[in-house]
Image 1 (cartoon, rainbow, N blue to C red):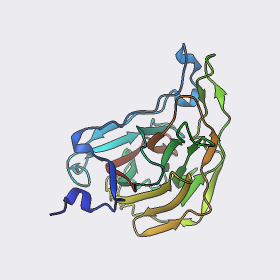
Image 2 (image 1 turned 90 degrees about the horizontal axis):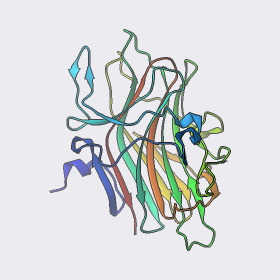
Image 3 (image 1 turned 180 degrees about the vertical axis):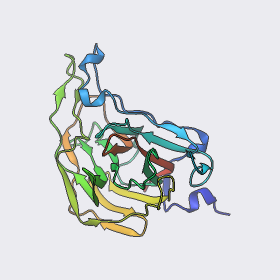
Image 4 (image 1 turned 120 degrees about the vertical axis):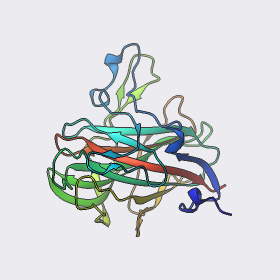
Length: 282
């Protein structure tokens, strides 16, 4: 009999990792900005990124919801300040250059601190890979595919998918020559995906939450986007290109995955991930 926890996913033939947060955070952690010798060398935007936590989705009016399937979800919670970001990252390396697929079940809401729906209080949720070719590759690069759902901007509903192609300015960190940094989640440089507008289920009061399906396909061999799916919508990413830059010291075969949430107002924004499956084809 097929495992019911896996049957709700559509993985490629090789499962790389499967994380059900009823078993803990399983390697997902906060993103710390690069530094050398002193923490003061860290770029300022990285200094207050909020890390992940476990949550059973307790609400003041309905009690404990639990996750999509089980008790706990991974929760990302921003500060109560417009533009604040919370991010969870899992750091792996890859064995083969080929197709990979990331799937997850998620929901997002602002903190239910008002008796109104507040559907435009969360600015964006996003997913990214942070990748680098093997050291023996003919032309190694660091490649950073970023996709986000821009829910709202300055209180106005946007509801569209975007990608980011241009990298931010690279800064040398310390004096060893081994470490660089750039704030790749900066608000500038996002491009709308053609036909990318999508209205998501956002239930009628601030504490009701509906779970969504999320899938991103990427090809490590060509370092190119393939497809994006959210619920019933499948988006062709042929026009989308990832951020590219010269390969960096000590990052060979890197396969990092991250989710994030950004708030649009002075209220905490929440992103919950029930479970994540990363698969490949080799």
